[in-house]
Image (tube, rainbow, N blue to C red; front, side, top):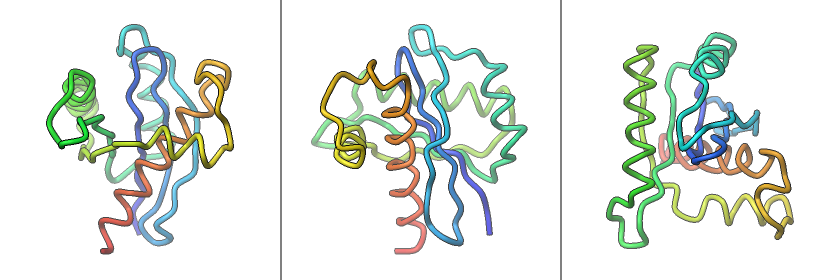
Length: 137
C-alpha cells in the first residue's frame, strides 16, 4: 500500500487531498494559501512531513483539446519546484473539470472563495481519485 498527496494548483489557494492505493480513495485535507501561485513552502514541508507520501499527484488544467494552458504550465512549475525542494516523486494528471466535479460533490454553486478552501481540497481529492483509478485500470 502506498500513500499519495494530491494538489489542485491555484493562484490564491492550492487544494490538498490524501489518498491510498489500497482503497483507491482520496479525502480532502486542506488548502494552502498562495500568492500568485507561490505557497509558503514551510506549509508544504509540514504536509509532506506529516503524511510522508510515496508520490505527489498534481492536476494540470489542460485545455479541452489536451494542450497546455498557462495555468497548466504554472502547475507544472509548482510540481518541479516541489520536487527540487523536497525530493519527492511527482506525477501530473489532467484535471479537466475537477472543480466542476467538486462543486457537484459538495452541491455547491457559489463562488469558490466562499468555501474557504473546501472546494479546493475537494477538487484535489477528485484529481487524486482519477490518478488512483488510472493506476488500477
